[in-house]
Amino acid sequence: MKTNVLEVTMGAVILVVFAFCIIFAYSTSQWQPSKGYEVIAKFDRIDGIVRGSDVRLSGVKVGTIKDLHLDPKTFLAVVHLTLEPHVNLPTDSAAEIVSDGLLGGKYLALVPGGEDANITPGGEIIHTQSAVSLESLIGKFIFNAQEKKEEAVQ
Image (tube, one colour):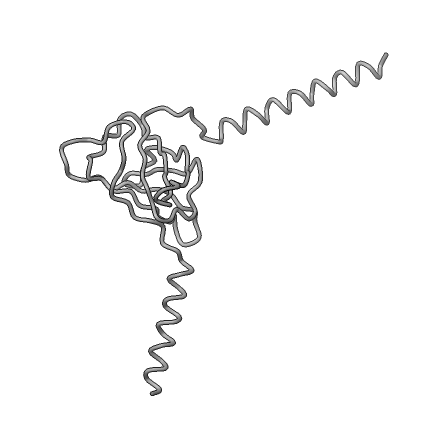
């Protein structure tokens, strides 16, 4: 009988620890059900952006990336983002993919425009700036420096 009571007690302890881990993971994940409204933006490149990435306005998180897919006709990356209900973007606002520091992740930054009319739910952010590839910038710098060196030698 003692073995059964010990096994039941250990099972209960394991279930309590498992429940604690689930509650802790949920509370620290900052996951929230999607509330607000959705808009889209189309980019040439979206390197580093994934579902769940932040959408920030003036450095403050105002939404998340809901979905990403490729438009088969234009071959542009279509980004669906959910914005908080209180964020009203003018129609001439811009979206750009920026890095969160030198080695940090990337997020989508919104730059508000000056128009009086606002983007409606389901609308599109027309002005976009794609992600800048650090590797391509370094490559351009190296090859440009090499060309200048070869011109100086001649």
